[in-house]
Image (cartoon, rainbow, N blue to C red; front, side):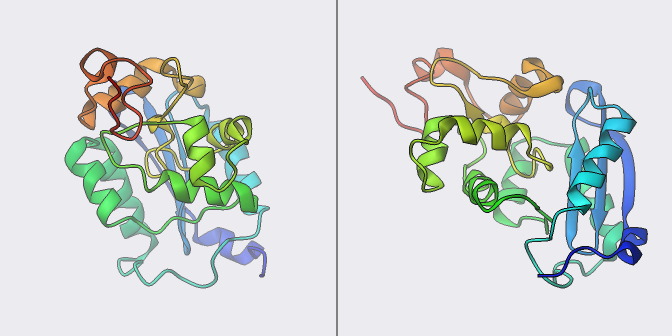
Length: 206
């Protein structure tokens, strides 16, 4: 698998926008798909550092994604519009017809992120359950690390991952934004679900 060439870095497109919570989001796309999304609380310098780290990793796919019919700028504009309007309808559309993503990371993290993309909007999973889905049942802590290093949140919905006894963390963006995203997706919260352990994957324990 070839590494990203320096020449192709010139094909990157970036934008800034306001999304859920009212903060600034930073988004980047390239010829293989969406490369990075930085949540509010991330400085421009930190975003550029994220892009540099991602570009140093080998891509997990070869060649242009056939879904990039509108070109890189078209993909960037569509992704930005989704972030701006994020709600259950948008999240369901992204779930059913995912945008091309240029995900890069270790084999384990790629498995975790792929398993995470299968979590329905309006549902949540624990770190332990996501570890099981990724084929590593005892790797809940490593799943947490994969969440912290998720380069494309929302589209790889790390906000849907919670601790077994509460909402868990959401990095610099804060728990307020995590709960806002879950509410926008139709999640009813602990109160209507019977507690944090009862709502995982839509299961209800009596």
